[in-house]
Image 1 (cartoon, rainbow, N blue to C red):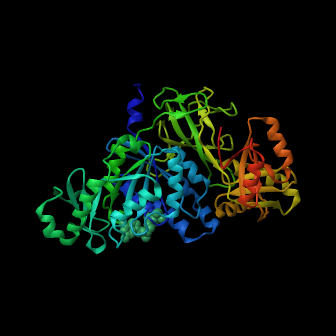
Image 2 (spheres, rainbow, N blue to C red):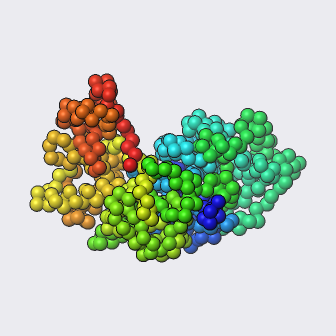
Image 3 (cartoon, protein in one colour):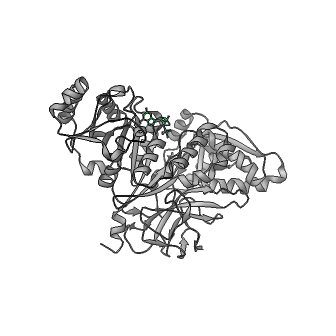
Amino acid sequence: MSDLTPQVRRRRTFAIISHPDAGKTTLTEKLLLFSGAIQIAGSVKARKASRHATSDWMEIEKQRGISVASSVMQMEYRDCVINLLDTPGHQDFSEDTYRVLTAVDAALMVIDAANGVEPQTRRLLQVCRARNTPILTFVNKMDREVQEPLSLMDEIERELGMSVVPFTWPVGMGKAFHGVMDLREEQMRVFSPGEDRKTLDDEIIDGLQNPVYAERFGAEYEHARHDIELVQMAAPSFDEAEFLSGKQTPMFFGSAINNFGVREVLDALVDLAPPPSNRTAIQREVKPDESKFSGVVFKIQANMDPAHRDRIAFVRVASGHFERGMRLKVVRSGKELRPNTVVSFLSQRRELLDEAFAGDIIGIPNHGVLQLGDTLTEGEALQFTGLPFFAPEMFRTVEVADPLRTKQLKAGLQQLGEEGAIQVFRPVAGSMLLLGAVGQLQFEVVAHRLEHEYGVKARIAPSRFQVARWVTCDDANELKRFIDGNSHRVAHDAVDAPTVLVEYAPELRAIEANWPKIKFHALREHA
Ligand code: GDP
């Protein structure tokens, strides 16, 4: 117990994850609404509109201000400080999303009850699972004709490899959606549609077996009662340890657009989701309530004004008490930083922040002093681990149209690489740079920003490579032999890590078989 313990215990930091159109934006707005942190609906929507109206990056660019402001939201609810991190949808889906998930202590998964588990949900879940992130599940759109709740439950269990514990159960669906049974409180919350409805006055009926149910809700109630009996026999009971290690997920049903079932989710976040816990640095475990500040940069976003090229580094506070104007050390470079204009994201406005505690996210404007994965401390040499870089799945060559601008191209790519907008590789043989990404949009963003921020018209052309793996070996000589022997397909990334690039997966398997001492990695952790 330290002076900071109470502040740590009241914090919850989570991300909402879903496949596009499942209702993430709607649910985010409603969560903010319930916590009283609103005026915000507009800006969440505006951002979304910008994303959907066009796939043209220029438009997205215009909205960058909004997207900086709404990618982290902070709200207070029931004496808890809740930090909610947005994960981009499919159009701007990139490695960024993965890294955001390293900054949270829990995730809220939104499932469209008609579509069930969708590809993006699956991918995001994989990342959460790799980190044992606890997951709450919200099954949305019960006001539509959707899948049977039992089969949804089964699908989530099978597809995502978690056991599901229903906390609520729907009575009916679509036009005949009557509400949800709260299986723990043993009561029914009766549904009434309407976005502007005051949610506090929901009708509540006591008991799971009240005789009025059959009378009022007829066949739907009978159906639900049957399901609930099955579920209560077959589903495991809630086990905190299983939940905290990401093996079991509490499931809630509702309709975000109708404000229905949202409060239960917010309550569950407060009651079930964990406060910030220890974070692992190479040197030691860091406790959230230690007195000294430490934090890690998990995302860098270029700021609104391209002329100034300033960027905001998003820092997850890992320990201690951050106060405006305090002196911080960038452990990697040894440089000192004294951020006076740190921004917080409370109530959606970018406002100056005075203090922050473990779990909070602070934004530090800088001109390149901070890089992805950097650790900030009050002086101690600590380096947090675990910020993932994923082997790119798409490759392009990049050349400058005007050779006199080569220097600018290199400088631009260096900065964009540091931001994590793209991965840049220097082939051992040849001088053409290679770009690697996990999403197509990343290339468009880079071309656009090179032109507008660095004055470089770049020719970005397809590359024959399709697969990349970072290579390491305990034996430095063997690694050198490997690199020399494969110079036509080895490149170095931004931090000089050697990478082997191939055209087809079978080629990679052949290389692996030929070089048994070399290790091949699809994921590199920042260290
Ligand atoms: P996102 O892409 O996951 O952020 O999804 P949105 O929040 O933008 O929702 C996608 C669409 O589903 C929008 O047209 C919403 O109005 C709609 N939607 C969201 N929640 C519900 C719901 O509970 N019921 C119904 N019928 N539609 C919903």
